[in-house]
Amino acid sequence: QVQLVESGGGLVQAGGSLRLSCAASFRTDRMGWYRQAPGKQRELVADITRGGATSYPESVSGRFTISRDNVKNTMYLQMNSLKPEDTAVYYCNAYSGPRIYWGQGTQVTVSS
Image (cartoon, rainbow, N blue to C red; front, side):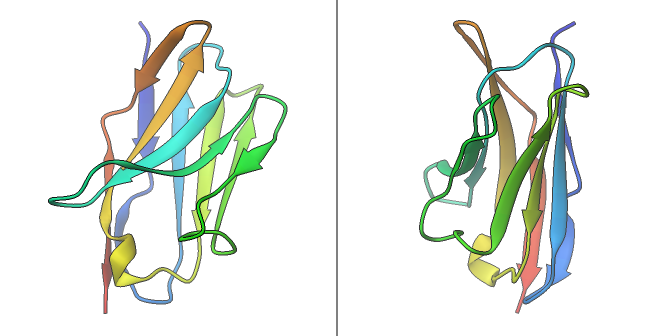
């Protein structure tokens, strides 16, 4: 069964840290983290190629770090210096050949 399972979300105070994980049940190519806040469009937070090349939007650059373990087919997002505006449901996605898969999402709430 093809699955992407996120974990690690929760409630944290501003300035705190969280680490998200996304475990895939299949071999993945490019993977990424997206987030969607209430009333807003889903936006890219970070992505990483199978070879480890990463990219971030300016809003999280320097605070978030994406990484992956190709043996475990697992991706991580280390989030530091969290801000209330980082509050959203975080989704992982993964490409496998021509197909794109999405996880179910994990809630991240940052209190001020």
